[in-house]
Image (tube, rainbow, N blue to C red; front, side, top):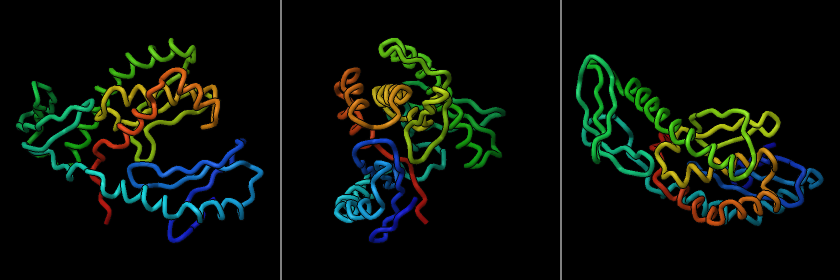
Length: 234
């Protein structure tokens, strides 16, 4: 269900939970509410009307948050890989290649490649980097928690850092985490693993996060405060 309150579109999801939870999600300030199944729509709307100012403040933060400029994938641009900034050096050749050396990324592309082709290739390079990190970190957190994912997949997402299907025990990790610091990736891996045993963001879920990663709130803030991707708002 979607409510429009003071020109703000809010997605309402009813769950088997005790309390109501309001989220304004990066990168574009998407607003969602998780509400108890027995809470009527009038009560939800009344609650949200008291939160309009807070929602607008959060959305404004995302609007004002530093973003990378639109990528053209030419020499002199910067790329972020695992939280580090690299300078792009583009050369032309007969095949695509991607190499890291010091603080530079050496990208070789075909003469006829356009921005879309270069972006697609860069994303595949990010996928390789992220896959390597996940292959190291997921077993670590599976061992610590005793929770096993049946499978995992990397997916480019614009409103979530990760997601989980508790029934199948499969988790998805946002490709954009290849740009963030490793601690942010660990936070998301743990977060999604815990959803296998606790579907909702309730007291039990929070207590499990506190148990396995006491600093998770600080890491979450770090993740959401880092540079966002360029977004075409037209």
